[in-house]
Amino acid sequence: MELFELPTPCYVIDEEQLLENLRLLGELKKETGCRILLAQKAFSCFAEYPLIGTFLDGTTASGLFEARLGFEEMGKENHIFSPAFREEEFDEIIRLCSHVVFNSFTQLERFYERCKRGRTSIGIRVNPECSTQGEHAIYDPCAPGSRLGVTAAGFRKEWADRLDGLHFHTLCEQNSDALEKTLEAVEEKFGQYLKLENIRWLNMGGGHHITREDYDLERLKRCIRRMQERYGVTVYLEPGEAVALNAGYLVTEVMDIVENGIKTAVLDASAACHMPDVLEMPYRPPLKGSGVPGEKPYDFRLSSCTCLAGDIIGDYSFDRELRVGDRLCFEDMAIYSMVKNNTFNGMALPGIARKKRDGQCELIRTFGYEDFKERLS
Image (cartoon, rainbow, N blue to C red; front, side, top):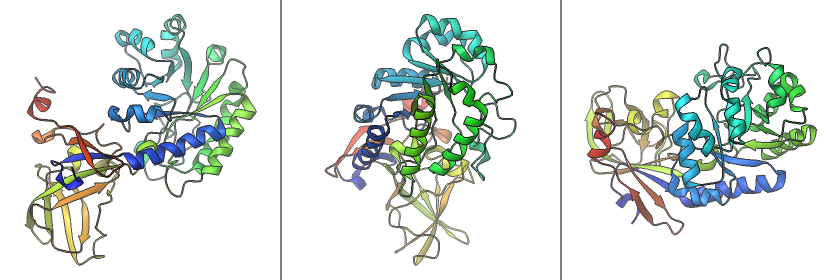
């Protein structure tokens, strides 16, 4: 099946690009000795877990359901962090997870004995209070008043010798210069704990755009080696975006053209339902064969058939007028799309397909009315 023969809307995973990303991450592991986990919060398409698991060391989860998915579908190291754990879920979490990272010493104290009985490796998330993100405050765990991670002032030293590792996650779509700056703050504020013999690992979290074309990979390698050599720890990275960056599409069809001062193409895909980052970031997804407004002869606003007035994907230009029935292909749609989509307005969830290395597409799954209904009561 060809790409534009798929039923729409449809997410398509580009296995050749996914493999290219994984090879790069595999080489990074080989050269530095670090361990790399898939952050499932960005990409949870478990049909690709067998492939991902041949290169990476396991998965990391933000809650019980992701932990179970990683355990069942990849079956390697399985780490979890949550701002708070539910009492009734914790026994299952320690059955599924090799590593548990706590957000506070209150939570650690509450669940410590159960972790030790389950022989689970225990970590605490720290907040180095070093913001590097600028305009995206919603994604800044180091913002003033952040609930994420223990600050140096709040670190309970009496618990330090009962930890196995420290974890920080402060980056979002950033290069390794931001990591280098963050590590200076981590060492300044938490270096005394990293020196302890019982601290065996340091998890540097996600947000590293490792597979981006302009990423400074050599600087990242220096950062990893520096921490490993200075403190004798195993370094973990848990990228989500970097695993599937540029490795997916969203194929959609033009349903109508309306005109009110500007021409708007109404699509069967939705920003609000199928690519929420477009409205949250905000983010203008790349679109095959298009340009910015004015670059090509014909400008169109791309929107959706939901009732939300602001359900607008963005303004694009084209070589010719769009027509009803045309197929469009948004790029970089593997990450934070399938994991965040919803059925607002009764919109159907997009199907999921993969584009194999020979260029042919295979439909993995479709969704219908029952998927919409079963989320409700």
